[in-house]
Length: 280
Image (tube, rainbow, N blue to C red; front, side, top):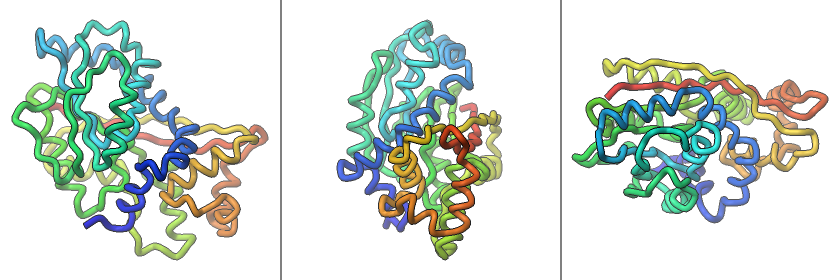
């Protein structure tokens, strides 16, 4: 059974939550640009293509959301110049809405090659495993008690010689820090907080998995005139569209945090993302 946080996440990833989702992405789409620029994806993909020979790379996009990362790779990662065949991408998400959104938005370098409407922790990988398995800003709402199993399913989906890549906010990054401050400020310390990159790394290493970590530090920027975008961004960070900026500012810890993120030009929310790479 889904608990409160996954339920609120599920409502967001739906047609009903589209307006809030689109408001969030007015700032958050930039997360994927930074990720596309942070790694030599051309070399990574060409190396995998060499390893698999004449067939296309098989890729699993875990908790695919709205498909922002494939588009960021095409726009900012130089994907069009990579010496690879079109990538066969399978889309995994508990939301049929998300799978449809991601499939409809795929750039030309990707071909839809499978759909899995399932939670990661319930996913049974096919015998024909994947050359790349990635989860980009995707695992925040997994219940902590299910995270270990979810990561084992993630790892088991990687083919020998393949790669697993998890891009996720560290505890001091905005996505984790702001949510935890919200729970404390509103007296909801007993509720589940978002999963952090540190929790993911600890479980992977506890299973004896070698993980390399790259840190990406940047800011999510909005101008002073983009109040609606800032409000939608923060509401999605809480999975709570009823929490307006005015309401947030009624809680001194949240008001202090938001004020620290303000400047003469607008807003700058600090992000610290870990890119964790696992060899298959």
